[in-house]
Amino acid sequence: MVAGRAGHEVFCRACGRPINAAAPLCPGCGAPQGRAAGQGEVGDKSRIAAALLAILLGGLGVHKFYLARPFQGLLYLVFCWTFIPAIIGFIEGIAYLCMSDTGFARKYG
Image (cartoon, rainbow, N blue to C red; front, side, top):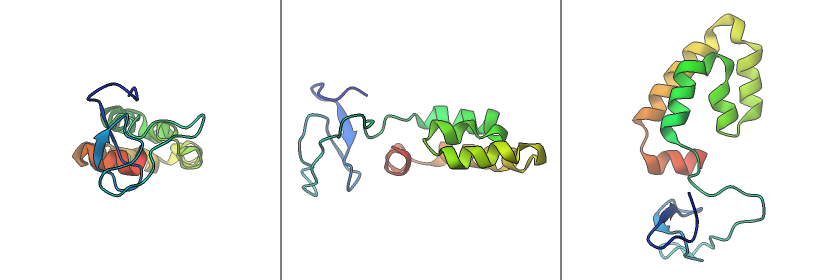
């Protein structure tokens, strides 16, 4: 997502409400929306991409690396020979598909 575009919405970092990308403060909760250098933008991870990675490559933990959870990704990779991470990844992929965009952005954004 590109911040600053007129009419473009992102999610508040504190309360999760959709707000204008150029807003310095959330109109709902008043939380500042500025980003530190090098930080990603809220909601920059695709729910569909995470779900497909979890369903197709969940046994290797690829979806965890995509969602910036490298420790969990390494655990999936270490235990991939047991096929347990593949089963859990498939279930997580279905859960990502059932989750709302707002909920996903709040949790993984």
